[in-house]
Structure formats: structure tokens, C-alpha cells
Length: 353
Ligand SMILES: Cc1ncc(COP(=O)(O)O)c(C=O)c1O
Image (cartoon, helix red, strand yellow):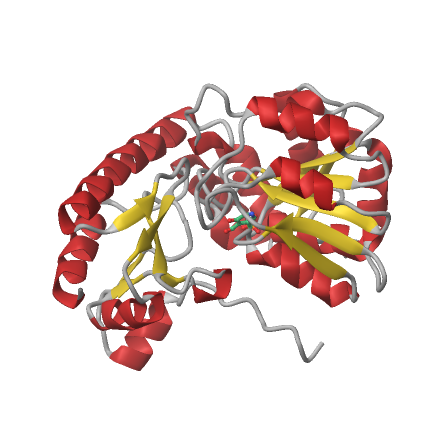
């Protein structure tokens, strides 16, 4: 346990106000939805507040049925978690122990590594292609007799890169059936690439494929902590045995059930993200800042010294994320914000670089 470093989240706005005396900092550090939650979700929460004395539905019945219908799968293939992070932890808890290992890529979402370490299992990483893209062939080759989980992020955080359909299909054929394949698709809805694979199409009862999705990103409900897995019923059943009884809050269930079909909110989010991304890319080019082209709602930028620039940007009232913990000491990860937030970031970058 001494070797495990706690997860370093995006610095909270209140903390920056308190510590640096910055009155209205802009937070572009946690890949949140800058336009806010769906108004339908907010209204449903308001109406439910007087019932907070009650425990939630421990089985998330309405929510599971709604998600199952959306994906055209049986409800027994859906598992709800307190964010997809909880599900990553539960999968590691179920399938790993000392002597066993999980395989992923270097520069992958750091929770895969932390969840593995907490079980005493080992975490094997494989270099990225070009330092930026998951190499599924190399990951398949790294699987050994003791491997029980492969963690894949598509798009990956913090690179924003994706693997495409042909590579994914090839990978599925190579992975032994005893290995759980976790396809973490937290940013699924942002991707516009014609060759981007939807792992939900590849579920069958031979493989242990687990697709992870979340309501924290495009749906704008990160504060409520709701995510889900689609998986074989036997895996869902195992997850249900080890979760705590009321792992998804009542407000989380109510908000997601009400807001999930708000297509206007999703469209607006996509528009703001596409405009913001185009603006940031244009400015980075002008400023000579190298970046990794992203399929998600954040962008990895090479600013020379990530931690130092992060500290300086904080003093300018802009919170980004240093990436030294992800093996990119030169980089910061910037979430796409509202247009005025992106402008404030660019103005601050011009000052500090
Ligand atoms: C790749 C990836 N997976 C999972 C998560 C966790 O999301 P949740 O809020 O559902 O726990 C994140 C959040 O940043 C992420 O980037």
C-alpha cells in the first residue's frame, strides 16, 4: 500500500479560491461538461429533494431498464456504479490478486493502475504507438498466463486518441477467453470518426467483454457519480455481490433517468465542444504549442514543463491538469470549456509561456 499514490484529481475551484485568493477561477481540469447538466435532470432532482430521507432503490430498477432498452440488451446485462471508477475498482477486486496481473498501455487512465495496485496484483504496461496511441497488437502480445484483465480506454484519457475498428476486431480474436476485456468508453458520445468501434456490438457469450460508459461527461452529471457497465450476466451478477447495497444515490438515479434522453442538451454540448476544440487547436498552432489531436473533450498540449505551467496558470485563475503523473512531464491536459473560458486560458497561456 505504501507504493500507492492517491489519485490526483483536478484542483477544485474552491481550493484555488481559498489558497490563491483567485475570485473566479476557470476549471478546465476534469473533462467536465462546461454547459452544465441537462435542465430536465435538474428539474427532476428539485422535485425529489423532499424524499431524501429514503434510501435509494438499491437495484436501480428504473434506470437499468431504461439503459437496457436504449442499448437493446436484457436488463441483467447492465450494472450501475457510483461512476465508472467504482466499476473499475470492483472489476479489479473481483479478478485480480497477488500473482495475477492486468495489462494496459503506458499513459492510460491512471485509475486502472491504482485499482490493480490495491489488489496486490501487478500492472503490466505496453508502450504506445508513437507515444500517443494504444497499440492493441502489443497489448495482446503482453497477455500471459497470469493476466486476468486488459484495460483499454477508447478514447484514452489523457491522450484523446482512439483505436479503430480493424485493430479492435483483430485484438478480440487474439485475447484468451479467461481474460476480462474492459473497454472504457467514457467519452464515446464525442467521437466522430467513421472507424471508431462501438464495443457494444461485440458482446457475445464467449468473451468476457465489459463496456464502461458514464453520465459524468457528455451528460454533465459528474457530481452525482453515475456510470454503468454492459457485460455478460454472470459478470454483472459477480459485480452485484461485491458492491455496497446502495451504491447509486437516489438523486443520481432520478437525474439520469430524467436527463438521459435530452438530445438537445447533448447536441449543444457537442457544438460547444467542437467549436472550443477548433479554437484551441488554432491558437495552439499560432503559439507553436504541439498537441495531440483529440477525439474527446480535452486536449494534451506540450507546454515544455507541465507542472510549472500548471502552477503559473493557477495564479492566472485557470485550472488545468499537469501530466507528469501520466508520464508526460512536458504536458498539461486542458478540458474544452465555454468560449469565454477557452479565451481566458489562451490569454493566460500567452502570459505564462
Ligand atoms: C477514461 C475515463 N474513464 C473513466 C472515468 C471516470 O468517470 P466516472 O466519473 O464515471 O467515474 C474518467 C473520468 O475522467 C475517464 O477519463
